[in-house]
Image (cartoon, rainbow, N blue to C red):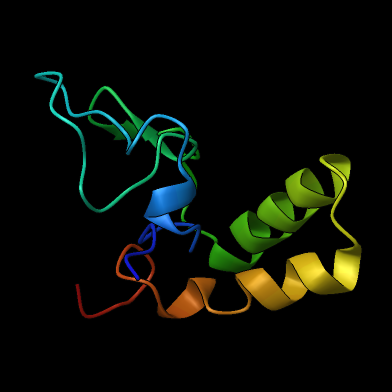
Length: 85
Protein backbone atom coordinates (compact mmCIF):
# COMPACT_ATOMS: atom_id res chain seq x y z
CA UNK A 1 0.00 0.00 0.00
CA UNK A 2 1.38 3.40 -0.99
CA UNK A 3 1.66 5.91 1.84
CA UNK A 4 2.28 9.61 1.86
CA UNK A 5 6.02 10.05 2.26
CA UNK A 6 5.48 12.94 4.65
CA UNK A 7 2.72 11.81 7.07
CA UNK A 8 2.24 8.06 6.36
CA UNK A 9 -1.45 8.35 5.47
CA UNK A 10 -2.45 5.67 2.96
CA UNK A 11 -2.71 7.43 -0.39
CA UNK A 12 -5.90 5.50 -1.12
CA UNK A 13 -7.56 7.40 1.77
CA UNK A 14 -6.61 10.82 0.44
CA UNK A 15 -9.89 12.52 -0.53
CA UNK A 16 -8.14 14.34 -3.41
CA UNK A 17 -6.03 11.44 -4.63
CA UNK A 18 -2.73 13.10 -3.74
CA UNK A 19 -1.24 16.54 -3.34
CA UNK A 20 -0.68 18.81 -6.31
CA UNK A 21 2.44 19.89 -8.16
CA UNK A 22 2.89 23.46 -9.40
CA UNK A 23 1.71 22.41 -12.87
CA UNK A 24 -1.48 20.86 -11.44
CA UNK A 25 -0.43 17.20 -11.71
CA UNK A 26 -1.23 14.94 -8.76
CA UNK A 27 1.71 14.03 -6.55
CA UNK A 28 2.32 10.31 -6.28
CA UNK A 29 4.46 10.74 -3.14
CA UNK A 30 2.59 13.22 -0.97
CA UNK A 31 -1.05 13.56 0.10
CA UNK A 32 -3.22 16.63 -0.28
CA UNK A 33 -3.08 17.28 3.48
CA UNK A 34 0.71 17.70 3.35
CA UNK A 35 1.45 19.05 -0.10
CA UNK A 36 -0.14 21.45 -2.57
CA UNK A 37 0.96 23.62 -5.49
CA UNK A 38 4.43 22.03 -5.35
CA UNK A 39 5.16 22.86 -1.70
CA UNK A 40 4.72 21.36 1.76
CA UNK A 41 2.19 23.03 4.04
CA UNK A 42 4.43 22.37 7.05
CA UNK A 43 7.55 24.37 6.27
CA UNK A 44 9.66 23.31 9.26
CA UNK A 45 12.22 20.55 9.31
CA UNK A 46 11.76 19.24 12.86
CA UNK A 47 10.32 15.76 12.37
CA UNK A 48 9.35 15.35 16.05
CA UNK A 49 7.43 18.65 15.99
CA UNK A 50 5.73 17.59 12.77
CA UNK A 51 4.85 14.19 14.22
CA UNK A 52 3.26 15.88 17.27
CA UNK A 53 1.28 18.17 14.97
CA UNK A 54 -0.07 15.19 12.98
CA UNK A 55 -1.01 13.31 16.17
CA UNK A 56 -2.79 16.40 17.54
CA UNK A 57 -4.67 16.88 14.26
CA UNK A 58 -5.78 13.25 14.32
CA UNK A 59 -6.94 13.60 17.96
CA UNK A 60 -8.90 16.74 17.01
CA UNK A 61 -10.58 14.64 14.32
CA UNK A 62 -11.72 11.97 16.79
CA UNK A 63 -8.78 9.56 16.94
CA UNK A 64 -7.72 8.20 20.32
CA UNK A 65 -4.22 9.59 21.07
CA UNK A 66 -2.44 6.19 21.46
CA UNK A 67 -3.89 5.01 18.15
CA UNK A 68 -2.89 8.27 16.44
CA UNK A 69 0.65 7.88 17.77
CA UNK A 70 0.75 4.26 16.56
CA UNK A 71 -0.18 5.32 13.01
CA UNK A 72 2.41 8.12 12.97
CA UNK A 73 5.36 6.34 14.55
CA UNK A 74 6.95 5.66 11.15
CA UNK A 75 7.03 9.33 10.09
CA UNK A 76 10.78 9.73 10.85
CA UNK A 77 11.59 6.91 8.41
CA UNK A 78 9.59 8.34 5.48
CA UNK A 79 11.36 9.78 2.44
CA UNK A 80 10.70 13.44 3.30
CA UNK A 81 12.35 13.08 6.71
CA UNK A 82 15.24 10.71 5.97
CA UNK A 83 18.67 12.29 5.95
CA UNK A 84 19.77 10.23 2.93
CA UNK A 85 17.16 11.57 0.49
